[in-house]
Image (cartoon, rainbow, N blue to C red; front, side, top):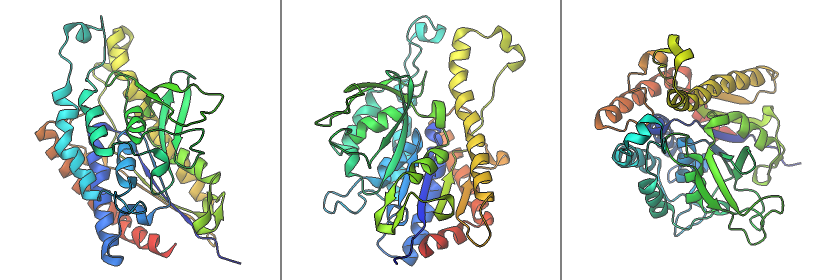
Length: 352
């Protein structure tokens, strides 16, 4: 009987411009693996990728098919990193809405115009469909119509659920108070009867800023035929989870009982997003810890150590100074990851 192979899973947190940090880790990982297997990209070494918000955008970049070879990735990990370095300022700082009503919470409290981001996503991904991605994936969003979480997955029947990748990425990055909700369409020929064709979505970070547990659950219900592994258990998973150096400052928290509506509106998304990250990391550590020593899976969590988080607390600050600070933090995070055994983990990817 053909041996089951472990399912290699990559999970990427949300975090705005801090996506630079996981992008740097993946750039290193891709180069390291290319030295062992020339001509490969990061997508060749994982069977499933999950992402939320900025992690969802990275997921889309890594899995976009090449124009010439639909089974190979169009973009390298370096190009994913450059996406943030070169485009971050225009997505955030240059798109900031200057409106006194917004500042006082009397009108639209959204901080940034989505026009540049939407045009950029259309330029980068064109009419690529979710089902066309080169590996299975999960990208999170919150469906305002159904008032529930929504998972964009590339393994569903495209006759019932099909979306343009650009719309999926716009949805997962629609963080409340940062960007307006994403209004998109299910472009499948026979949409699922229980769902509306039109959707209004928010950033999946409102419930799963660390999507590792979502990835675990989805993998448990997936048939990975190429690896002879249907509905794999934790002992048959090999998971790399990468954070974005979370954490933020709650100014004047001792006076939170007197916060204005706008102050709460601005703070709540960050509270929800940050609170879920460590919870999921703990849950995954507990799951991995239950495995028997003779039947181990694999799990590694990488995030920026608190003492190296010397960058702006604002996840939308894409100023040249903060991007430089994030690049430095990324290097520190990579050094920390190597000390934790990143190279050994990457070697393990090749053994699965």
